[in-house]
Image 1 (cartoon, rainbow, N blue to C red):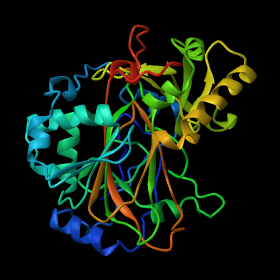
Image 2 (spheres, helix red, strand yellow):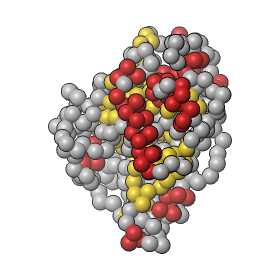
Image 3 (cartoon, rainbow, N blue to C red):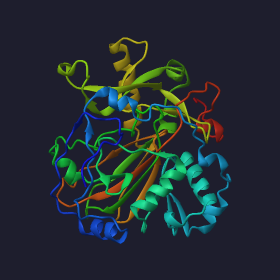
Image 4 (tube, rainbow, N blue to C red):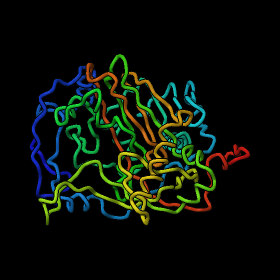
Length: 377
């Protein structure tokens, strides 16, 4: 399979090298069962864009996004009624659903799942028998599936990204002191014109010890701020940059540059109508209208609020065959590399793009909407 750019208009590319790693046995079994052609190598690595303007043109258009959660029964009777058990993992974030297969959900159940994700931020399903093709089909129900111009893909299924730390380590070696990659607090695809909504990560291979992922709630992070401090950031925008760097076609010797987009610091989820803090240390670089020193001071505090309050976080222990679906509009996440590459880990990820981020000054906080306010809130 010859490399090709994700966007056919891209002509200036860096040709990738073929991977020579051994595919973990559980991953191979899953892919072969799904009929994935592995004869030409795995994964499929598209030719990568070299220039900034090429990447800016990818998905550079407005599109209507109607979140399935807006159609859902608030009581989620179809979803909850079919499950064996519903387990809320913490008070503020994280729910596990037992006894359902994602591939078998009805449209009504998918709508209710979208609402549950909007309310609980991340939802987990263990023991899933789901192919990459079925994973993509579910992603398409939630929104336009993102096809990443940099990421390795499942052969023949564009939009299903391969998450394989051992492969990533061939390009940038990881270490205990600098694990890199997803082992930092971040939110997916903040540089998009219409960034990520729901991401679905299915891990078919996990280490016996370690490799947990932590998510933090943007609803609760915003609620941790005093009402007076919220007034400082409400309505303000920031610059969010891409994870990958590119060259300026007109000045290639200027060094690497990033895709940058301007989005609100606080956004409102279109399904719940609740405000959420929307910053992340990896990719939020400055607040528009402030000096860099002023911006750094405020952003540093916001990052700390999001990252250091363990009562607004959930840490999840993976098992083989588990799916996690989370909402990038209201969370940040961080993958632990404490297994240090000593055992294989492999999964596939599908991300559904959502609406253009927006702020509504009249929107409530989650605690306000649920009647949970304390005396100082």
